[in-house]
Length: 113
Image 1 (tube, rainbow, N blue to C red):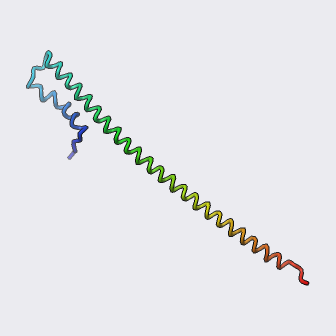
Image 2: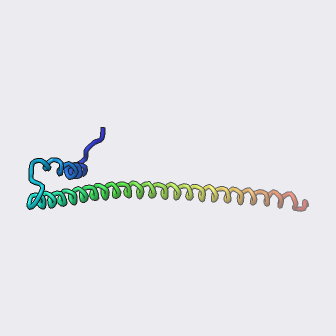
Image 3: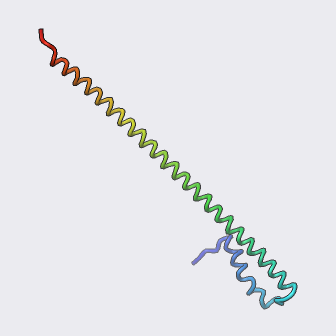
């Protein structure tokens, strides 16, 4: 069952108004002009309501997308920092091992007295 929102109500009223007044008022002359003016007003109001609701939905979506993008950037930054730290640790360990290997190699190649 569809729900009627505040922005749907003026649209529905604008759609059914001609039928509602068709048999109540004469459909010529000043009455017809007044009804057409009212219809124009109702239709414009309905368009404004729909546009306003659409703008609000778009703004909400943009806020959600911006937050999601910010989270993705933060996540990517954290991953880069962690990779950089891991790489730094690996380079340090490799340098440490290379230094130990060089010392051991130097000790094994020194002439004995």
